[in-house]
Image: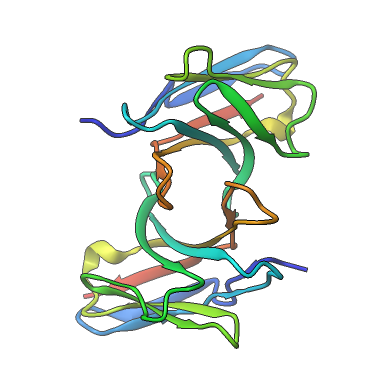
Length: 112
Length: 116
């Protein structure tokens, strides 16, 4: 399978803990996106990378959130000092510069 | 103002019938793209169809077609010959090339349930 993959698929953590998610894009795609989706809503943009450069960040991305794409391949999204409001599905997508973004299966985060 | 509005929270459709999902958008960009994605209960967002703002023809992909009415700022999705596997959430999204960069802005979605 050469689609976008995300790990882990599910994460349960206690409030105040740090969590890190990984996204592996489609191999030839140089653009990578992170979105967050809460229950009953559409996804909301968090951040965008072109190769290793983080080119766009949403106001939703507070100081507790950081994303990296060190070698222009996989990306990580870290949330520090998690809060209950961080509970959501975190979606990663990639594209090659054409219009379509292809999404991974998501990481569902539950903060207790 | 909402950039993408999907007014139908849920719809029932009979198997083999066609269904139209409404989407209106708001942008002042001249260059933009409109997308429809399907999200089954498994959670993965599946790309269905794309329409560019300068495309004169309505986009079609198999059983999916996009009814693009630029002056009305609407981009409705038509699914023909509905199948049970079409039961899912459907999201309309927009990319504003000038103002929005590369991100997609999504609507709130429409849940479709296909009845046998």
